[in-house]
Length: 389
Image (cartoon, rainbow, N blue to C red):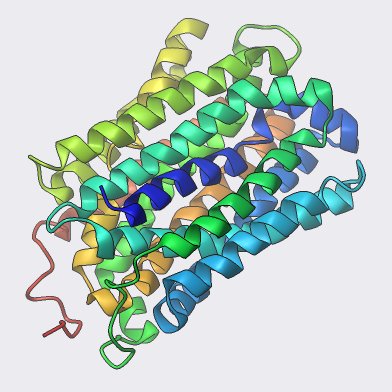
């Protein structure tokens, strides 16, 4: 495995930890900042708002100025944003820090995905994209296991740890091999062409369902388990979030292996279809243990197709515009995270339970599965976008 791919997998662990450094200590953060569930959902989603807003610009930046320079900007923002939140136990500072961190995530995430796409062996980009996604789950799992312990030492450590490890990745940038960097901007397609491509919307909306499920359900599962078991205190169920991250990580890793034998279209649509049934079963709420098993199964099926989505996206455009295409797909994916994270928090406050959120997810799954029926063939060589000679 070359150094570019090693760097990408290490970066994915960092990204996963940052995404989930808050959910393991929801009750403690509510007390620290004086928040309701709705207020907490705003803080949880703040990183995703700025991350999502930068997806398309980040892709354009990476395609224009190159992988290394874009990663320098992104990792610097990750460092500054996390350290900013440690200054005082103030909601405004925490919110500002999460927004800056989200900007760094937006720049770094998309650029690292392009680095994988142009560095992976021929025909293996989807597999390594799945391994990248699995690395994010490893980081998320580490957050659920480590953050409760760190918080007992000091609340600042949940921000300090990623704030001090991001500079290590900055140093590692010196070893990247930029030989596979796109040769010129002249072969790039316009953003308008990508926006007019139906595949970008279909893939993005499927990604919104699946990535939105992993992050929103993973964020709220400690509180969900506290509800269904009828006890107070979500922090004691942080292990439930860890189990969800294990299921997600296994789904992403196994998805990479599955893509060695099955088509990306089959894996992408198949996962969405199964999710529709799982959400309906979770809503029925047969027993606490059954709900936990179903939530873990949903995390697996929402993750197994991660590499398939970006493999399909990479096929739709020339390599010179991959980051822009990834940005479009990831923008929609992160909008799903924002909408579903807020949805679960608001429904909890409004209706007193999380189960209604799964009905919304189920309807979304059915709708996008039906809409994605046209994703039946490889896009190349008949993509409407210009192809690299």
